[in-house]
Image (cartoon, rainbow, N blue to C red; front, side, top):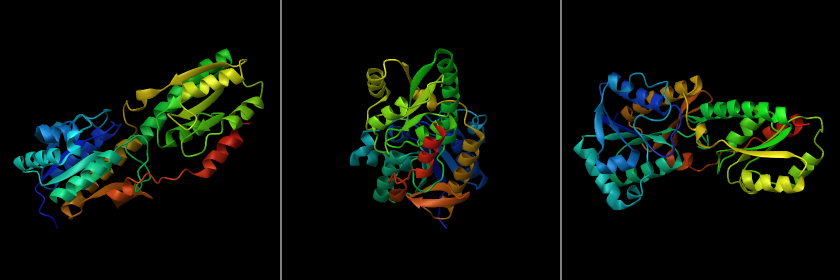
Length: 325
């Protein structure tokens, strides 16, 4: 058993719906186990500047339903330096913090892993990213809300596409991971899905459009940002040149995917891993991400969690092909 007495909690990297639910779970479970809990604003940057404050149960009242993060988030170039990390550690010690819960993605966990090894401070991570690209958990906090936000937007786009017989190319987030595009493309009935995990064959896309049913009043192509064939504007330009008869439009969903009230699934996921993180620190765990695999809590070393080795299910791609006829 560890001798943890005070936990610091922070969010870092891109925000994700459900982060507030995770903060709430960490604070209240810490208090439940008679630990002190401190909030660190703006991630590693706040750790370096000393923006640290004590939290109680009221600090996290009425936040479980809110998107974003009450602790704010930021990226920190200073924390990449030994001097920055030394300042961060000194500030933690000044506030008697002897363990950390980091809520974020691969960049957050990479920094936490280095920091924990340098200063022997136990850190557990909660998977907060809409991309669902961390190994060691079936789903990440924010992913379910993000894909439902995309579906809601694409359903609305489909309405206007049908009204005007248009082809819409919809770009979603996922520079390195196409899971958002893949799942939402299936759910939205997209004619084609372009993701970074598979080689983008523009000729195959053209062939599909060439032989597509002429009586379909709308067509949706889902694109993960910055894929091999380029972004939605690059692909849209090529489609317009090849098929001038199509009324082709581009829609970039952008940061609306990060916002909004977290779904029930994200709130429950965040609550479960938040409690498990506190219990893990009490039990002496460190340098691990807390996730859920097959509906059970799982602890994965940081170096394994950040490898982005989440494989795309080939059956999903086949489903797209079958259902697009």
